[in-house]
Length: 172
Image (cartoon, rainbow, N blue to C red; front, side):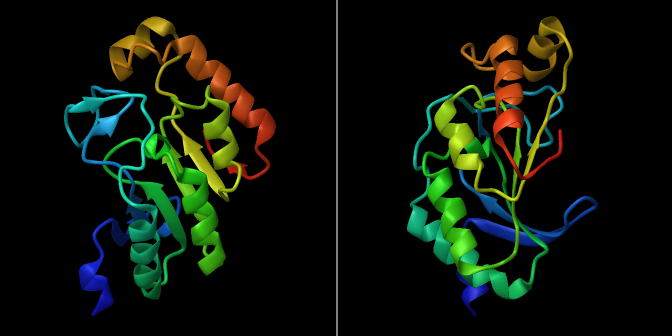
């Protein structure tokens, strides 16, 4: 069975917001821009802002195609790290959209929205769900423990810029 060979896709899992969510894991376990104190996965082992093709794009698309037989309500880019660290995110979203009408959602901490190329790639998603855990720089540093280049100011400015540019659904 093709789904037994799927390596980078999980579910669909039940989601109160997304129904049956087919998750796509784009980065290695605990590769993130943050080391949040509340993360259910534990401490971040690779805190980075370097975007790379962590998994070959073709492998991801093959895995998604094989898993679409599970009839999800959303294909959700999330997983065990920050999905915007995937350097071919825009190509992945376009590839998924070319093979199915199932909407694409991205669950993100929004930490790289200050980068124009990240915002541009996310414009293709049907739904983007960034998190905002803190209202002050002090609480942001305490709760999210970000990479040193992801300042609170950059986070807020990036979220605002994306909100102005994006025409899809944005659930903050």
